[in-house]
Length: 416
Image (cartoon, rainbow, N blue to C red; front, side, top):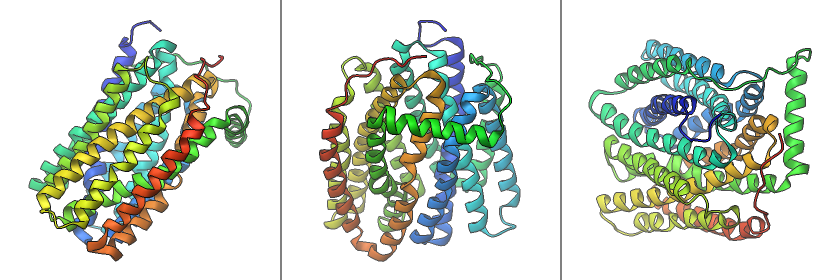
């Protein structure tokens, strides 16, 4: 491990992430939109996307356990190859079986793989970077995620709008195969754990150890999880279900324009990652509640343009700009929280703890997506009530969270 940021292995991880996340991004854009366009039901859209998140939540802790006990490079390679095989099977089955059932199964497996994949990537960073490079490294990974999510929806919107779903499937298969093959050349330092314990005993022990660390040794992490959980329930779920429904059904915009709006979200994430990296030495965990407050307040203009008699294109521009700003603030919050947790957590627990945090923080999101799907179907032209309500709740949560974040001491590097 060297002192510079972009070592050979970290660079390969970054490039692999760009390719793999691009393939994942165009799929996550196109498959739910395909369902919405084919059925026209916001309720069904919300329920299917909610179901797809459940395996991600359940498999995130398993991904962390595996990441701490198996070579992280092998996890990335196997899961990328598995994803390419999954989409190949989906392509072959499309048009021959029930669309809703096919999409539910495919999205559940796809998100489950993603849930097991991300802890391996995050847990590899402390093995590849020095502690003083960790915040910058996390910012780079978040920028890569944002870049893939920027290009993916824009490219996906163009491909889907002009050629339909199949070209997107072909492109994603190529991305996953190429990424997996390239990841074979990554070397991540790995110390094999001792054998002799059954898999179930290992899972039970590791989960207990992770939850005990969060609950007793660092309870502030648990409080942070509750805050993120609330935001995922009211804000993230609203964006996932609300954006495609509002833009394509209420404003009657094209899939290309919806792709640009999703790209704006990713561009905001990219800016947030860049700002976090640039100002890494000036930022601290004690002021992150301001970022949450700004994210929640960004919903107010969206509610206003849906409430008032605003031309569709003007409403679309306001929604897109607010989404951009919201994502920039959210990404700055996420990077700081992740780096804070990594700094507090002993190296042998990082993968398990991060995966448990991911799972716990997302556990409310499927409920939110299902509820918002029904709300948008019921409220229809009065959907601004849902947006106003989410804005008010998020701002109140943000304001109350300052009591927690202001009491957090600046993190010291964790013991080995």
